[in-house]
Length: 147
Image 1 (cartoon, rainbow, N blue to C red):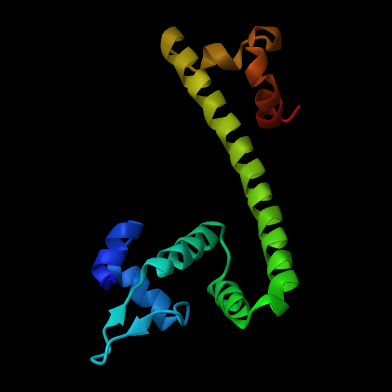
Image 2 (cartoon, one colour):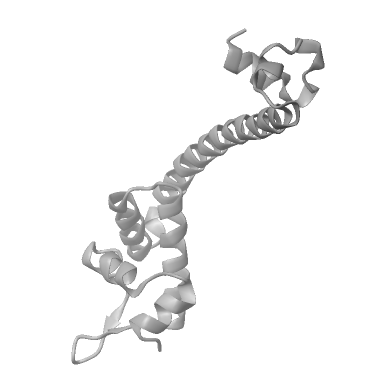
């Protein structure tokens, strides 16, 4: 058994996060003492990790709550849960592709400013021939310049 503080520490979140989840109806599985104090069990840790994971993917609290209730309902909702996760996987894959493109731009800008710093001006890069740009940055260069 864990207190809210102990479970929060174990998860690496603030206790207020768990209180918020409870207020939003995401913790129907958490028991309470006679005095109304939340009592977390070891198996609640897995639920809370899944909730945190889904939040990181950008899933709405409404959809997370729906997933929890589907799971609690039992095996009759397996297909619905599978579809929910397939949809979320597509969303995460799209986010990852967008982040990959963002990282390429950030890496390019690091090269850009490192090169500018060495020459003492950004004009050196602006006037650089395309052939002199490292191959790994040519695609980003084209996107930025609009070629």
